[in-house]
Structure formats: structure tokens, C-alpha cells
Length: 506
Image (cartoon, rainbow, N blue to C red; front, side):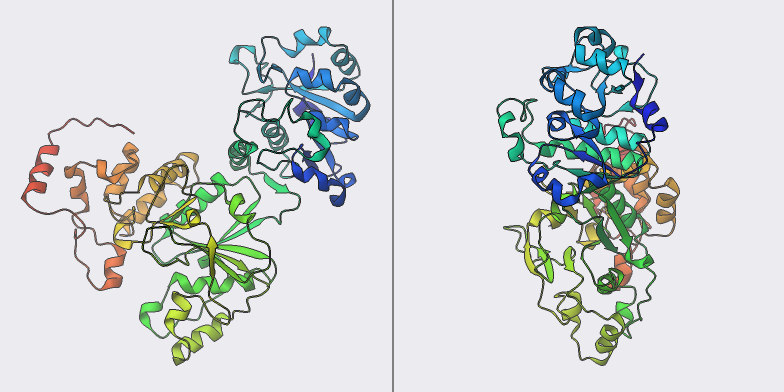
């Protein structure tokens, strides 16, 4: 019986000698020599094995094995294939055990102990071996390679030539019309969603060579935003296909002197001025605020800018009538010499306008350049397949305090996913409600997985009749149930809804 990749990895002296580098055919492959491939165990995908000696060659499709038989024998320490190999870019009708006698190269590798296998999620369940972890694969070999290494316990995995887009490196131009996107996918970007899921479930970290990692994200929050903060952080981690370091600024370990103005105490906007110091005044970082939800992979945002900038913000959505918002910033920590103690002292002395600190972020530097596409800070708006980060800035309509937000579904779907995965314990939701930080009807939405508060029945909204949202205290207008509908028509709807059967649709 062919041994599994996981058995080999556990017992091989090769596996732990060097960091692992997954090597694909994308454009960044052209830079591989600059990164010292000799310092890594190379895990190559498909035809890359023809270019160099490697520790592991991976082939998901039998056609690759036939095309590269001589190179695999000469260059690969071992070849790893799914137990149900693909033919014509889909799982075939034969197992690897049935195929081995038909291909001399596979028979030779098996005799030499150089053929490994695994169960792929693309195979029919009845054909799987079932003696090792199931590797999540949908479209691309990079998904399989990452899944194999992450499930084997490798925590820091590097890549090159896994770039997204539609191009191959020049070394593989001869394959453009033969294998490039022959599985019918629009681009290699599709693979990153599965990669993000693998990282999220295994805790592995992915480091694409040529991109600084980890991505440093700092999240500002105010007292009472524990639930919103947790949803923001989990959404970032769930969607990221790159090593990520997320730091809640309220827990960063640097005390913020409290301004003399009571209205500014605990304000999240002051926290962002800690970031250069937290970065050691080196590299770049992203600033977000609690109440934002990541829909797309932050890798795309991180890969945009070079280092020739101080501050960048997202442009306003066309037609929104809004000024550019500074709730998302890209910071060059090397060029920002902010000092939080000096900043607060100047605020208290009146020598620094509050607007410069809170709204304009121009403290010893030019205001942020609004050059990041608006989809990365889509304020109080959501457009499916377009919005990358949704920002809930309108406090009276933030989904955790109001049932009436017209764009609340992304936030609630992120909450449900975080609770279901265990990233957010149910106790955190219960505590947020008990402390008055979230409306009571949010608990009803969570229990019945209602992704929109507008689908709550009128009788269920009565649970919010004594709720006072935190923003009301800040505005000096605390009034129980002020955000609820009023009038005779609503009261009739509330009474009628008590009689309706409790049927639910997600």
C-alpha cells in the first residue's frame, strides 16, 4: 500500500530540516534565486519539478505525471498524488493503486518508496482511503499543497509563484495554451479563498516571498465595543490568505494619557497614534476600527502600496456625498513620529485643534492621501462581490444596537460564523446584551440565525423597549426604546405577530 504523505512527513528526516516553500508557476517564480531556494525544502506544483531538484513534487493530474516522468524521477525526492488522481482536471474513475501498474514511472517510485498519497476532497467519498486527514481541495494544486503541510503540523509556510492573476512566469510560457486555467476558472485568485480557510482552521501562517509578512493590523475600539471588536478581528482572520498579526489597540500595552475633555476619554481615534511606536517605527501597518467587517482578503489591500508614502486612506464611494473617511488607514511607521503624550498635552493646551487629530489625522504630517479604492472602507453600504470591508459608521444604525440597518447582513453572517467556529463564545454575546452594549433582540437573531434585523417580528422587537444604546449616553439623549418604531400601526403589528407560528428562514 502506498504510504500517506502524513506518515512520511512524521517519520522523514527531511521534513523538519528547513522551512517549507511551495513553488508554483506564477510570475514571482522569476525571483526564486534571489530568495535563496537552497534555504528551503521545496514543495513544487505540477511542471515546476522539471526546473530543479525538489524535496516534494506534487501532481494532482495524471497528465502531469506523464508529461514530466523523467523530470520527476531525476529531480523529486518524493512524488505526492491524491488517491483518486485527476484526469482532464476532475477526479478520475480509478484510484492510484489501480493506476500504478499502467504507468512505469509510478511503479518505479512505489518500489523505491518515493510515491506518497492523500485523500482529496475532490474524490467521491466511497473511493477515499480514509486513513489520513481529508485535504481540502477545490480547484488548484496550491490548495492541496498548503493543506498537506498545514494538516501535517507545519506552522510557517512560504510560497513563491502562487500569485493570483492569469499569468505564468516566463519559464513556463510553453504551457500557456496547455494547462493555464484549463480548469475553467477565471483567474488564479480563486485559490486564495480556500487557502484562507485552511489557514483559519489550522492556525498555520502563509508567507509569500517578496511581500512583507505578517500583515500588521491594528484595531481601535471604545469601551463597550467588545462584541463589535471580536467580529472585526475574526472576519479579518477568516478571509486572510497571508500571515496576519491583529492587535486590539485597547490591549496594546501602551497607556494613553487621558485628555482633559471628558468627552474624549476612551476615544478610539486617539489609539491609532500608538501604531508607529508599536511597530518600532519600521515597516507599514493597517489601522481599522471596531465595527468593520472584512469581506475580502486583506492580502489584496496589503499588496497595493509601495513604501513611498506617509499615510493613505480610502477614497469616498462615488455618489455617496461623504468626505473620505479615516477609519481605515495605511501607515508608513518609519515616517510617522507621533508621540501620544505630546499629542494629548497639545490638545489640552489648545495648541492642536481637535479636528486635526480626530478628523484629518494631520499631526506633523500631511493629511492622508485618499488613494485606496473605496471598497476597502465601504461606509454604511454593502455591494455583493464588490465591497471588501464594510464599515458601520452611523452609530444609531450599527447592527448590534439597531435592528433597522439596511446593510446588516454581512455583520450578522460574520457574527454567526465566529460563534459557530468558537472564535466568539456565546457568553460574550450574552455579556454584551446584559451590560447594555448590544440590544436584547440581537440574542434572538443569533438563536434563529436571522441575518437581518428587519426580519424580526414586532413582538420580538419588544425585547428592546428598555434598551438604551451607548451612543445615546454619549449624545446626552438616553431614552429607552428610542430607536424602535412607534405609532398605532406598529402596535397592531406587534400584537398580531404574537399569533404567528415561529417558522424561520436563514
